[in-house]
Length: 357
Image 1 (cartoon, rainbow, N blue to C red):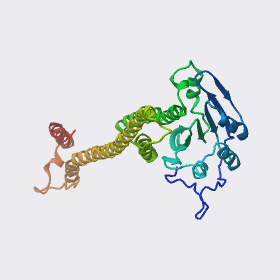
Image 2 (cartoon, helix red, strand yellow):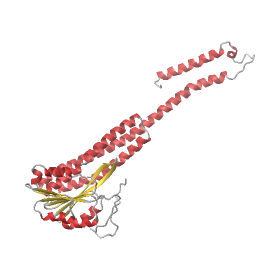
Image 3 (cartoon, helix red, strand yellow):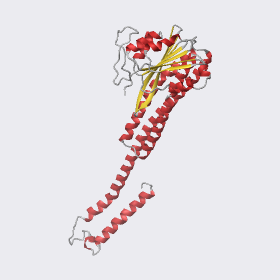
Image 4 (spheres, rainbow, N blue to C red):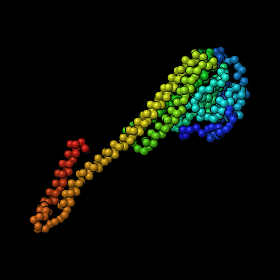
């Protein structure tokens, strides 16, 4: 996976111009609208851009969501229907944007969030774009999974604070859901790191080292993705804006706290991955030391035995008084092996006493 997003406009392109981008496996876009207030709720699916734009004039809160890879023509029609700023729509088209907040003419807030997800054991970073207007929220998500179904279920439920609040509360709820999606993802990395720790301590091998590097790289990508998100959330609660009252900022502060916790967990897991790499190298060093110690002991044992075998293998069997008298003994061969076994036993006892074995 690449750490740098390659989706960008050509240098010199006019600002706000929407250009079609190449998508390997395009996900057909689906437009849904929920129009609600404290008394009524209307939900529509599979709408056209023109049909979705009709609900902008509704006095109730309108949530328009586009799921999938929308083409430039569809985005232009949706942007015109909801009067979305062309620079913001350019960021929607060119995914992989840095998390940020943009405010346009005190009539619109544009928020970009990045959603890390594991799909088929591979990490993907998906962009979620949110527009907040006086009475509407427009959201775009290019991923294949609709993550906002829990919000729809809350809206369909009994009338409560959600239904009686304005578009700013819906904007907070969507932001909170995107930020909280990182918690179950990091729990999976926690389980993976625990399994890697057992593998490193039990039997470190090349496959384990490769997995450690892979996990460390993915955690670095998650940190790179979530770090600017903290600043974007902080800007939402710090700056004054007529579309986000103080009552909603209380809830956004809770979202900011969740973002800080996610970032801290990511940093902790990165340190754990780095520590596992150190443990892996230490385990290999200890295994190498054990092997070298065993080989050294074997060599040390056979050095004196080779010396004895070499001395008694000279075979100077003559009548000279200076030759080895043991060669003429009746039990010389047995005596030789007795010396060898005694020397071997003595060295093993000494090594055991020194805790070398």
